[in-house]
Amino acid sequence: MEQGILTNVMQSDRARAVVRSVAPSASDLIRMDHTKVIAAFHRYRIDTPAAQKQALANTICLLLEIHATLEEEIFYPAMREIDPEFIDVSLPEHEQIHRLISDLRAGVAGSAEFDETLMTLMRTVIHHAADEETVLLPRAERLLGQRMNALGARMTTRKIQLGLPRVPEFTVNAARAAPASRMFMGAAAIAACAFILTRAFRR
Ligand SMILES: [Fe+2]
Ligand SMILES: [Fe+2]
Image (cartoon, rainbow, N blue to C red; front, side, top):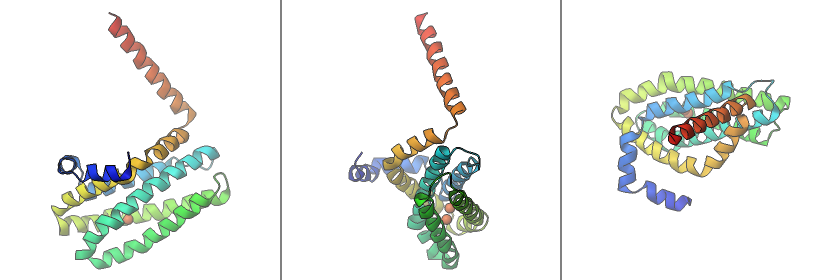
């Protein structure tokens, strides 16, 4: 779907009402994003084949780029209004994360430098996410209260706008990052379901 059409759809009253009713609060959304990217980091091992390392790194970069945009465009400005000092600490860490993402995107999976950059990114992200979850978010929940729900809805809308055009990238990298055994089990599960459904409809 064209970005302009998507933006119009997402800005309609109906779409806004649907997002408001299902969206997590800003802090739940941020915590869920952190969990997802840290899980992707945990799948990266030194002995993982280079093609899988590349796919995992691509997924990690995509997740982080979207997450950082949501925080920089929506959450941090809301927080800055009430507590500017906290955000002044967070932004330099985001700059470091963006630099590491650029290095990773320019690197060659399978090289020692690539592994090193990914591990540095992992360390930086885990440290940054821990600070946000243990200091920034509890403070935001206390100071912003119910506004966290409205912020969560805005962040969810923006996440859909940013994420939909990148679905092909996500899908390709998710398939390439999956170990062959998992792909085989997935295919076997689909075949088993198809077999059971066929038998059921024959009766
Ligand atoms: Fe952040
Ligand atoms: Fe974050």
